[in-house]
Image 1 (cartoon, helix red, strand yellow):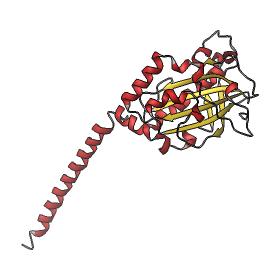
Image 2: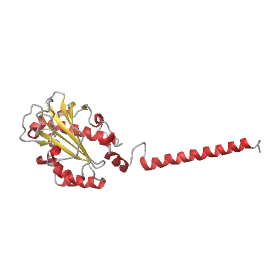
Image 3: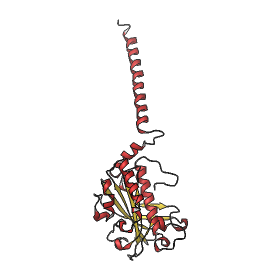
Image 4: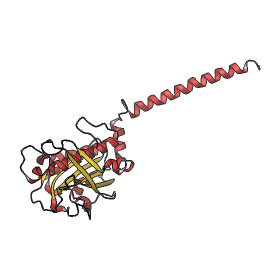
Length: 259
């Protein structure tokens, strides 16, 4: 018995090793099947779930970078640079922060609202960017997007987002009357609504604001178009959309890169 004991132990150890490898392999295969269809890309369900907590799990300097470079994002394909000058404390969504837009977004619920204000490199334009994380599921976000599209809610002047003014900055005089261009994005792959609103840093009032999608069209001769304010709103909304998607594990598209 004493002479056979070592060989018995060796056999038992070998069996345990094989079983352990099998269990680890099975666990790994299971995680690949449930979390990532290929090369670390999450399933749509996993990305949506991760997007619900992106505002909580991602540093503010990632979601709203201190400096954002917009390559070819200006009029005529000019490069733009935006510098963050203010960040609002994360808050519940209310009409005080979003104006009448809050009522239209209410069916999706609100988990958290984040906002920041930027100035362009020439300190001529100011832009507030907002990101509302909703309580809606994927179907709810699809419904919200369909309602905004059907009724053209994103382009209604009455539903322009409110700006975030900041004392002691170029955006100190950025109020509702200074809004010149805006965009509202209802995302459906993550439960987030991204918006941006822009105006002049000198505090001048704008009597004829224009949606960013219209202001960036070639040949448009309006003040928001010629000043680049439509490009500012669109460009920063594009960048913030990309950062929230990246924080949810969604790869950037060829035309969408996080800063």
